Image (spheres, helix red, strand yellow):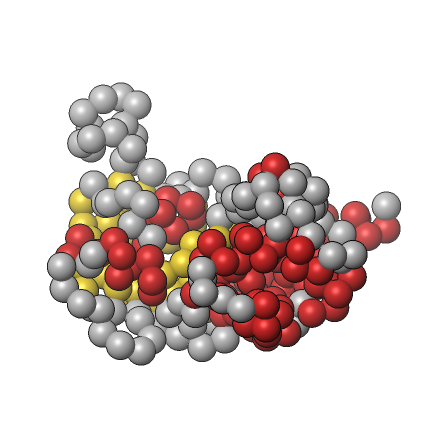
Length: 263
């Protein structure tokens, strides 16, 4: 394996096509889900991936995290091909927060120490403060010793993601891959998630699969996908002004959320 450079890490997707079968065209069911994708994400940049269901957002995130390898093309992190990076090194530098974070049937502190076994109580509390979540922690009757239940069932979907974000911060990753929870969350929890994400992403290379377009609006850059291809790429403001597919998607999202707020 080759070592990763120190400091912030860029991500490069180079002419990548991907099918879930072993080879493109081997079977009728092996239709490519990504078609010749090339994407450079600068070190420290926050990129939001948006697009309809099935557009390829999750597949790109899986490729960046090396949960799978491209069928064609390659992915680099810090200028090093992922196939040349040891799994141990990659997991220390890149953290994935999935749409449904897995929590063990134990306390919040136990779940945080899964990421950082030597973390003290003060270290864990400091992580909540750093992400602006100390008020939520203090609202729990037992604080860090609150039991989360089987797979986190004692917490709401949004609260499970709060714990997962704090757990990710304990590792101090250089690259963060986040798949936002799609489950409906109350407005206060959504504010807390947004605040925590903004602080966690600060200075880190961050790839967000943005289901709530409020996240996309705060990212440095928005990449719009459709049918496995990049169809738009630019800042939130640039894409709104362009009046294309992202602008239409954002307007539809605004109308749906305003309808919910008046319901």
